[in-house]
Length: 110
Length: 114
Image 1 (tube, chains in turn yellow, red):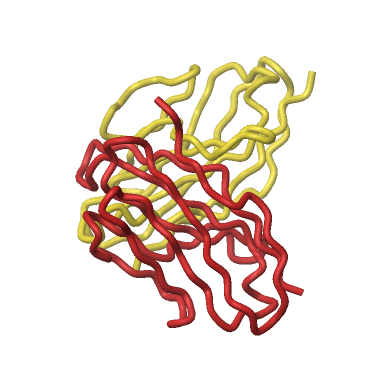
Image 2 (cartoon, rainbow over the protein chains, first blue to last red; image 1 turned 135 degrees about the vertical axis):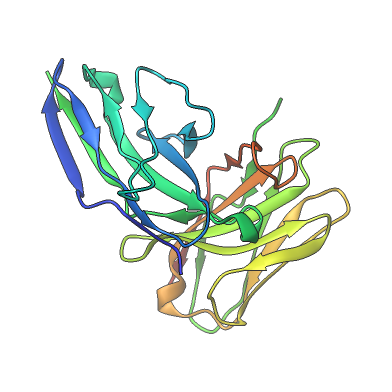
């Protein structure tokens, strides 16, 4: 079975503070992992994926297979980062199926 | 390029009725996936269609069905609606369904069952 766990429903930080959104997964195969973001009144959109190994809007995420984690990090939070963040896993044998975590609301306070 | 569109955006039905939701993928995309989003269960995969064939199915009862047309547009149908079917239904499209293919989500259809 595949499962994605995001332990925090809400993460509140001050502007300029570091951010880490936690994501742990359970999957027996080789995972493809993503972070999706949903800003207020906008549609769900891809933020980054582990295979790209890139930084988007200052966010990075490293796949740690030993700890089965894919935490999202940003060194200095900005107010425009406030949004709902979803971690998702794509099991390789199921086409485009995505298994989502419950999501974490990030609030960046000024 | 126009994004993924979903119609209608809002729908109110009563228990026992059936409903059909529509999704138009980005031009050239052949894969369409459907998700149900509720406060209690979060985002759950319903099914995926690729080149008019259902490729994967989530753990939902047979009342939930779908299809894809030759132009890649997809519809999902829910029969004998229950109160618990109230949710935001999202569709996502991608070019194929292999690795490195980004999925693009639509705005969703908000279904309320009374």
